[in-house]
Length: 225
Image 1 (spheres, one colour):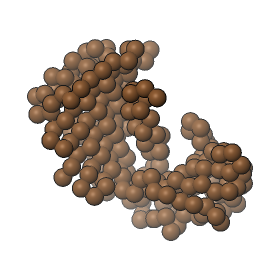
Image 2 (image 1 turned 180 degrees about the vertical axis):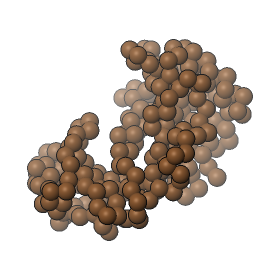
Image 3 (image 1 turned 90 degrees about the vertical axis):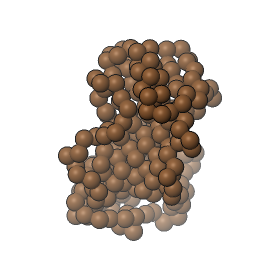
Image 4 (image 1 turned 60 degrees about the vertical axis):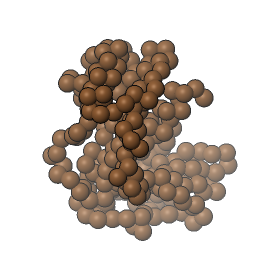
C-alpha cells in the first residue's frame, strides 16, 4: 500500500461511520440489541460529528450476512429503514431515546460490521460546522468529526473548494506557517498532494485531491492537551 493510501484509508473509514442524525435524549450501548455470540470491539467511544455526539462499536459474529439483517428486522419490527453505504448494508431505527444503525458485510462464512448509536447533542445544532478550521475562503465543509481519547483530541474534516489543487496547497503552506505550524514533509502522487504539519506534539495531515468539479480537502488533526 502506498503512502497516500495509508493516510486515506483510516480517514475515509471514519467519515463513512459518521452517518447518525441528531436525537433528543441520552442513550448508550445497553439499549442496542445484540445477537447471541456477537463479539464487540470499540471503534469510537467519544466523538462529535457535525455537533452531534455518537459512539461506534465493531462486531464479528458466526452468522450469515442475511441472518444479521433478519435479526434487526425482527427486533425493530416495522420501525426500520434499509440502505447501503460503501460495502455495508445498513439497518437503522429511531427510538424515543436514540438513533441506532447496524452496518453489516459478509466475511467468509460469518459477518462483520459496526453498531452506530447517536447521543444527545452537546453543542448548539445551529453552530457553524467546521468552526475554527483553517480553510480556503470559498471552502464548503462537508463533514466535521471530532474525537476525544484521554489527553488526545482528534478531528477529521472533509471540505470542497473551487480552487485548483496547487492553489489549495499554496494556501495551506502559507496559512499553516502563519498559524505557527511547521512543515514536516510533503509529497505528491499523480495529481494529489499530501502535506504534514507539526506544532509540538500536535500533527495535522492535509490531503488535497482533485475531482472533475471541485478540489477535495481531507484534514486529519491530532492534538495533545
